[in-house]
Image 1 (cartoon, helix red, strand yellow):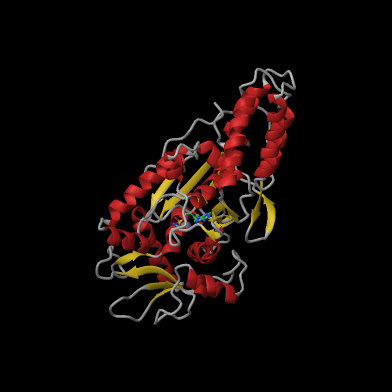
Image 2 (cartoon, rainbow, N blue to C red):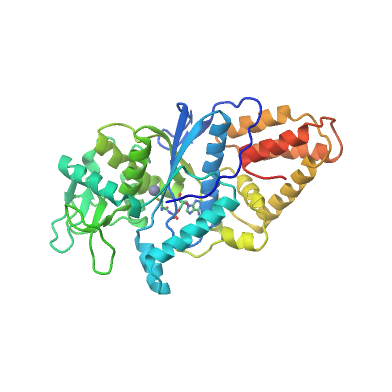
Length: 413
Ligand code: 5CA
Ligand code: ZN
């Protein structure tokens, strides 16, 4: 699937410290230590509705990771999926009387537009579930052959399940206890009560064809892919095992990332799927997590149509730390719009205070688990001085504009 066009990324002079990110699995800040090519997989959208600020926050956070790694001189192989075969798509398509494929492709188009407007660097591989069905079938065959998977005893619907006990290390990614796993499994798309399963937490790999649902032929019976195996194979087949960063919102810690990792580990016999498991906090509105199912959404496309500068959306999202759950409110946006206008005025000044130290501090804050609030504060201080005429460096305004563009993805031009 084609992604979207890349904004230009200017090269910033000077060096950047090594990036450290919080790893959910080790519950610690750890250095990201990529080879020349850094490898990153971030879970993509389920395209049944428009991109909201929660999605934007997650993709913008990983865009910072991408930009910081590039600033360190790495090439970044970035992969993202699209869950374009899933129940919510069929339900919404049915409700609206449209074909589920059309709905998916319309929402993917809108997502591309939103990402391009936010100046998010595109993934190199942008892969739909539909496109990866062959890979899911091959993986499921292999898991069946090794005994890591089984077919439920149901003549009508012989679904294929993955055995939670197929790897010895299951549970290491989330670190959750059994009760927490059970709660999230039931809340987030799992089916603990499906008759015929050997263990309530065994995860669906292949859903046998049901009337009215799309299906693909497979040696173990026609059907469609389960959710976790989709991300497992899309990442594994492009990045291999032990890739640098697996990313997504904190709502994906369990069961999705736990099972994606376990599937790949059972397939290869190797540990571990990703070296870093990185999760963003949840953006909320009116006191609740922003979600398509609750309907409390602020859409990126709506804000754009209302004339909000995408740079202000970025700065609003950066005003809190990416790992903290936080609310999107009118004051968050107003502060961001004011900050953007101030920075624009400052970089339009003929001169300002020397910017080399500021750029160093911004790089250091970002390298420290993407500490955007401190990075913004360093830039605010420089801008305040530049506006009142402090400093005589004629290069400083240009250097700040380049740094804000390259590292934060915000165009001050
Ligand atoms: N297609 C799956 C991942 S394979 C999925 O979760 N799709 S989604 O459309 O529901 O979410 C897309 C991405 O946005 C995921 O990484 C998810 O964790 C993240 N996300 C969803 N809601 C929020 C929110 N309120 N705040 C922050 N991130 C969110
Ligand atoms: Zn995923």
